[in-house]
Structures are given as C-alpha cells and as structure tokens.
Image 1 (cartoon, rainbow, N blue to C red):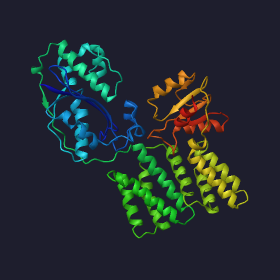
Image 2: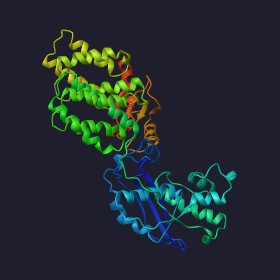
Image 3: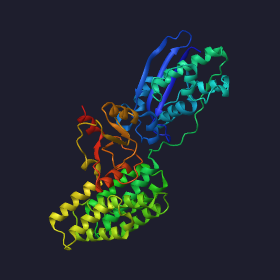
Image 4: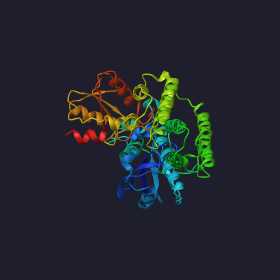
Length: 459
C-alpha cells in the first residue's frame, strides 16, 4: 500500500447524497510525501438542501450556488482515486456511496475503488468499554487528535488521516495485516430532485388556496392560466412523487386545449383536496396556508373585484377558528372596512392589493433598519449565509446583544437568515415571524430584519 487518499464529503441531502463539499489528502503512506496537492472543494450539488444536513455542516444553497458542479470537479480529482487505497470514517456507507451516486447521476465512469474504513478498524481494536461510541469526534478525542472544524469535509479528511495513523501506532498494527476492501456499489435508483416533505405539503396547500382564489369570482383570467402552467412547469420535476404526479396528470388534461374553465379548476381543486384530506398537518397550519394561497390567487391578475372580496370574507367567516392567527385578523379588518358600503372603488382595490402583498411578504414589508444590537434581545430564524447559528449568535453577543432562543413579547429584534428554513410551516414565512407579527399586533415592538440588511447596517 503506497498511494493512499484520505477522503470526506458533505452532502446537501440524505436522499441523493448530492455532494456540496469534498476534502482530499493524497500521499505516499511509506514516507508521507504528498502525491497531489490537498483539496478543499465546494460544489454546487444542483439539488435541494435538506434542512437537517444544513444544520450539520452549515453549507447552504446560497453558499455554493456559484461553485462548479460535480462533473467539472471530477476531472480535477479523478486521479486521486485511481490506483489508490481510500481511507475514511464510515467511508463505504457515506462518502464512497455519495461519490458513486454522483458518478451515476452524471453518467461518468466509476473506477475500481479500494478502501479502509477507520470505523471498522476502531471497532476491531478498541474495546467498547474504552469509548462512549465510535464516532470520529469521540475517537479523535480518545487519541488526542485535533479536528479544526467538525463536519467540514477537508478538516474531517485531515483528522481521519491522523486518526488512522494513531490507531496504527497505538496497537502496533502491521499495515499488511489490514484488509483492504473493494467497494461494491449498491444498485442505484434513478436520481430524483430532492424536496423536503414539508415543502411539498406547503406548496400543495398554498396551490389549493391559489386555485380557490382563481374561481372565487367564477372567471379564469389569462394571468391565472399562466400561473397554473408555470406551477406545473416548476413542480413537474418532482413527479416521481405520487402526490405531485396525480396533480400534474390532471393539469395536463385541463391545459391541453389552451383554455381552462371554472369547471376544470373545480376538478383540479378536487384532486388537490383529496391530497390535503390525508396529510398529517395541523388544521391551523393547513388553513393558514390555504388562506395565503387564496390571497395570492385573487391578486394574480392584478385586479380585485367586489365579488372576490365578498367571497373571501365569507371564507373567513366559515373559518372563524383562525381568529388571532395571522393573517386572518388583518384580512378580516381590511375587508370589513372596504365592504362597509358594499362598493369597491379603484382606490380601495389598490389598497387591498397593497395590504395583501404586505401580508404575503411580511419579512420584506416589515423590515427595519438596525443600527445597534447593544443591550437588545435578538432571536434568530432560518439558516444563515454568514455561517451556522452559533457563529451568528457569537457575533451578536460580541456586539453587546442577548440571544432569545424563541420569540417573546420582550424580544427586540427577529433576524431572518438569507437561507430560510425549507420546513417553514405557514405561507412564505416561518412560525417565528408569525409569532412576532401577532405579538406586534397586540402591542409589542419586535423589529423584523433580514440577515443581509442586518450585516450591512451593523458596523
């Protein structure tokens, strides 16, 4: 064994293990001389990000959107894997699995891959009573190996190299006695674009509300037809999921002749409603998402009519249990005001449109300029381009701020990460934003700001 490659990856999601970072060290094991330069490479996975994975490694879609895709990177690093022994921690189940999936996805040739797993090696030589578990962080602590930044692919690859050598030295292992295994790829299913289940549920719930909004005035405009076509185009890539496939199938049928009637919209509503009847979402969350969709639906064509306002108000009355859940109260207040004389003027229609846009985009519309966090209580929501939440919290504390883990009546600032959480439960905003708005409507003064605006204003 001469040429060894220490290898680690981070991936965007657990479904496809689409790689977003690779760390590699390649050396001659006998003398430690490098074969090739060390590599710390970020990759655009061209796939969706799992919120759980983001929490682990802190890499977001925004961070890697301008990085090269895997095929470009592979041309640069293929030589690291040929005629080499690949060493990593759980390397077969995680890192090599991700590598082979990427090669399959892009129809690239898969080289013969040989490996040694430090997880297997540790289990073979280290008694279970000596360590709490066999994770790499635990083993590195046991052997006094430093990991500069855990779950950074390059730092993990470097730590794995030190860990491997520490095990060899501690147990006086003859390198010839270590079994080198040939990697046997699992049978790969076709790559499918990743999207988290909560995102699918929210998208379908809101879409149901949108098409309810389309039919609320018993007319289907050109803009509304275009919206449906664009929705189908956007979500057709997920038709490997039955829920989406059933909806897409009906959409194909109703747009086939280029004209969509109210009757066809009602048919489409029935298919979407069948999905919503079985999803495991709380009634409040589901109804709020539908309300957001209805609000969006009646503004798509840029016109608000009297019949739309009256039918929307009737929907609100029929769902009065949403009272005190934003944006129900705000919508009811606006409609009661403009329908007092049962006439919708042009100015009132414009006012309603403006207010609906504010309700649908509360983060943009309620943005506040913050010049200082000194002495302020700050709550964070979503994922951040600046870094992981602990990094953002550390920065805020360094500027004299205090961290609230949840939104409270006494919270001063709610900061929304540029890479908002995929699993937001309501509309186009998260539960923390919703709670802040509700507190503000009851007299609190919580300032809501985006991460980008925050860092541009804080010196």
